[in-house]
Image (cartoon, rainbow, N blue to C red; front, side, top):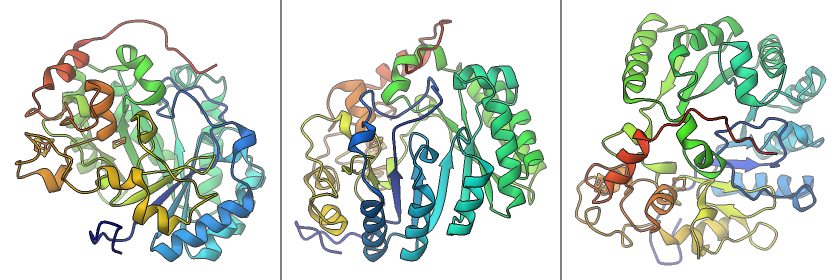
Length: 361
Ligand code: SF4
Ligand code: FES
């Protein structure tokens, strides 16, 4: 597809459909924005069905049904059915709290292809404490078994941080015992609410090194049994991640109220104009929305990115992180060791505080 400035870009591969911001859990690492979309502003079923059709026509292959907790919407089976009818592969990203076995069966019957369940820890008391919800761990385990019983492929998502990073081996064992075929180990991304809890969540450099070794050991041990996906956390990396595969190049995010973002945190950057699926087609948004064009090419880059040989590999890192840490969305992501502001990251990684988590109320 040609964009409004003549650049040829491939079709997006994935659509993150944030069906609702409502969620029964209160995880301190939540990367959703501080100001959440209200229930009354959420897109209705017919709009989500249209978004699925438009996404498929645009070339999107997968829709990730996320939130908040997507099961907070009673019409979730209808949305899954619409995704299936549009020809999209559907992946449900759920806390499993509030999702009953009956609803899960209805989702399977509607054509759901895959389920990802987040688990906060292998230790029950710690898991419930992190989730801010008593009995969350038991519910997650029960629902994971139900997913496998229904024959749906299961991925376990684990967000690791200082309190649980030492239990990666036990968390992978738990995932195996639940019948998962994949485990995704993600370090906290300090956007949205998570930034408030950064000092309480930040692991030490030693913990991160141990975690990297543990993951390698577990990959060898469980080769052929379970796929283990893990990346080095931002604050301890030498180079930044190519966030979202490059701004406006690979995926779209639709918020509960219908705004379309190049990444889930994009609204932190001031001055960007986001178009809404209520007023524009997804194809028009992908091609011409000002927010998508803002950082799609490399013309916006400053040095050292502008002349760096890696600029088409990592695209200068994460725009949201660059803004949150430096106040300038055009700056080199300070995670990069070549950034003149790299000291900000090194300093933040060294700031740890033994204090209670701040939960969303
Ligand atoms: Fe990537 Fe910019 Fe660092 Fe080069 S200078 S590695 S393009 S972030
Ligand atoms: Fe927005 Fe990385 S989260 S560009």
